[in-house]
Image (cartoon, rainbow, N blue to C red):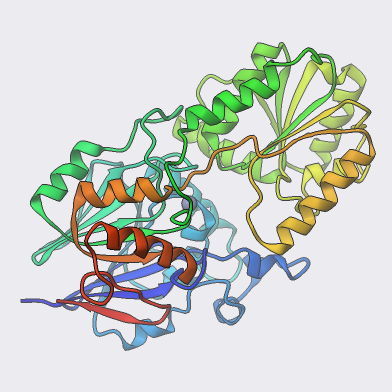
Length: 445
Ligand SMILES: [Zn+2]
């Protein structure tokens, strides 16, 4: 019999910089290598691409994988569940240390490829293996990796099932239980139930929204909210700007569709809009949406100037800056740094919540105040989350009935909320429910 252990490398004490290593005997499968951006953003002009791994580890920005040196085994595969930076953002800094392939779904793999190409210090030469949900990868003779389709706030998100001779480990990081998504299919419930029937040894799960009661609304509800704000108004001649997550392709497509219904031209503005939309075009997720994209500052400024001359009522600009990030397009517009004039009665729609950190709250407050001072009307939080709430977590637990549960991707507060739900479902802390902190290895009996 081989023994199995879970090594919490990053993302167990915080939201961000996810990395988990699963050791089966002397073979290791690594799940995710992410970055924690709030640790980077507090320094002005930080060029992550030009920073050394050790410095980023010292800042607490990427997982401290030095603990891997004490783990008795060899990394055979690195798998990433989706393209958010807290899951792939450290690949370019850490993956080259391991002689193992990187496995990811098409959209995620395209983003990883871009991360690796823009890296200025390390040459990451690990082979990149593209695998769709529903497919399997033979890691070693007796270890198999399977991707299972789920929904989240980015397309092509998967659960990973690691099949070992001692049982199956399910890695559920991140997800929402969305039965009516606007892009892609609902989670593969049949497969999850089948896994539950066969028996799941352990579930490693995110806990981001575990303290929020009830169920996370479907992305269909978010589309309704966006459409209601954009189309349900008598004030149809005013200037309208929308800001949202540039990686949230489903949401951007809902906004583009609304623009066409309004008789306006949708325009995507900002470097990260260009990056993610380009990825969506290459991987087939962009659909038929007739949209123009401007990434670089000069072309963005030109586009905004053209919108002003041709008339704000002819366009729907969709831009970066929903967290009030200085330097993002919305902040530049609010500061009057572009030719786009915010006038009395113009609408600014935030199709995003505030990511709860003092830095974001302060930045967002600044940008909203500046927009209001120019007469802008603010529509806040036209959004639903991409993370499962408490009852969604309960449902997943019942569906796959794991022998052991390990919360990840959260802090002690969200882990404890999850624990209280799990206790009601029959789990007990210390016997089959395990709280693990960054840097610890948990042996599963
Ligand atoms: Zn995510």
